[in-house]
Image (tube, rainbow, N blue to C red; front, side, top):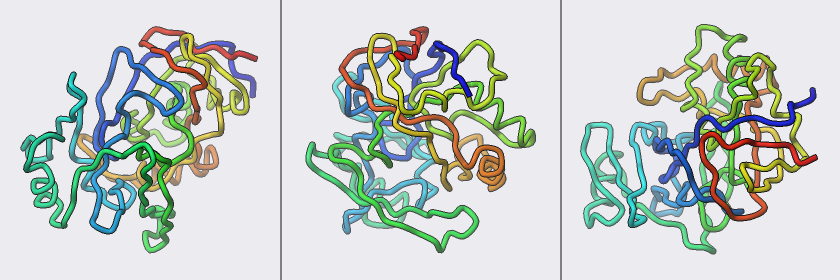
Length: 259
């Protein structure tokens, strides 16, 4: 498969708290560590596990956004609001999920463990892995890009599914113009692209997991989402990138292959 030379950024997303709903942006600063304020906060257990939608689906019901001062506002499923600088934030999160928890901003050298359900068909199968220092990513990659073409190809394989972009938690959504080209961004793997003026290494395809099947606001639980992706594209959807410089990108910027 040959990717077109360029695509246009049509959506930008940031997820201030690991596995909570994120916020849609018009522009954002980024560097090798990812988008500014993306997944820098996590909800952490006393044992040092960071909650993820992979193992605690209820966390997908909350949403988070970044304030101008860098603090995080959080809305819980029942409409209650709290914030990262609220003295009662830990108590509210603990009461909501009925277990001792704390909201924590990852330090530059801090790493935490994610408890990962590896098989959507059998949630007794689990694996623990560590986050990279300073953020709560699932991968060494820091930016996730997904094309509208890939979403359409996935939808065509399972037309009854809710293929809402929120299921897949991308940072960057692009259009190639021809959005019937299939899983076309995968042809960029191993190369360098520029997001606006920011170069980024395309590390690998994004292998999907149980979180794509979880219920969240406006979306039903659906195991067939994962089953269909596994059958149509080896359970992959989108690509992972690592920016190679600092800069700012915006909706409407062009993503170009540098090779």
